[in-house]
Image (cartoon, rainbow, N blue to C red; front, side):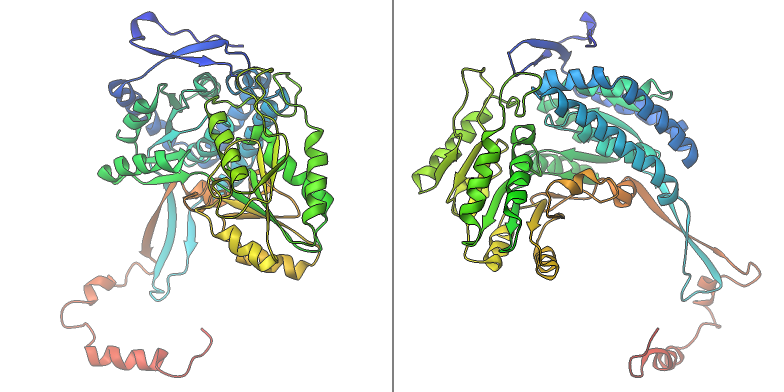
Length: 505
């Protein structure tokens, strides 16, 4: 692993990065104050001048070098991710792979998506109309700990492709991953990413700084504080927040497949995923069969600190208290734990068994609040119509899934699902397809990452109108003076054009 030394003269105070698997200190980083954050933004703005002037094809070529650097140092990056989060080795390497996949999509699409676009000049056909996409300038990226490389790359890939530079503030739990990611990006040539480390005060300083846009991924509570600060400067934001994703089973669903998918979609990364499957809505036709299949699949998983385990550590050990309290409250209200349900102190202080809770009611906190742990709730409903109502009656709306064989019925559920994404007969895959936009509704945030929409999220569309026939007088000048039409003439024109019965345009 790479050692990140901090010069003594710059260390007023520091944060230690802890391996949640055994409590070992991985390294330490400085807590950057407001002055240090402002200096980082200033450096990023200076570097943006050269980067913003680079052609679209030149940016894609540069991002290929960034991708190559991540690929070359993939083992090193995965080791740092695993050490700071407690993930199994495969999960950490899969995260690095996802970074490269996302960069590949941006490299391919950005030159097309951000190219000057000719559009219709209706109704002023003597004019030429086009849209140009220009960078904002400096993007502030505040990222969480659960996917400490992939989540910042979600924003950075598009932001850099659009000609911006960035200041990255990684989570205080995973600062070394953020530093290494910035190092890899910058070694490709132009220093495109400044990394500032620290706690919430550092993030607040970045939110209040002179950045031109903020991309935040994290909790709604923190998002509200960032939005309040950003509002003072009218700084635009992209907010990717929490989720409470539901899986709906139609009566004709492949129950075995749905159960295996739910177990994988819930317990991957120990449930610490914003699009984790947390709720499964089952009708009487498949309730018992799904419960039995899910318990069979979940009981085969290995939890522990071993690097090849299926379910790793809870990165924030205090979260285990939240998980336990949610389960205890649900059981006291009539729910039943059918798998797991216990912390594993014999493995260390940061492990919790994959847990399945049956007969959860929609009104329980376990069914309504984001758990962010390895807990799958089975919620009985009368029919699919009630499934849709319960799924949508939620503060969050990030993603969801539906299982069924009747395509028309499944499509009907997809249309009614009030979420940013829906997977059919699968889960989580919308986030793995980089051509699709990623984002939610309601308390799951706004704005989009991934896909063409994610690339344009970090570009300012500039409208340009030029002359098609340069010798004609300017149209604006005709609106004043003696040559302008009278109101009566305009009224007659409106009647001729649109005052009759509807017709095709």
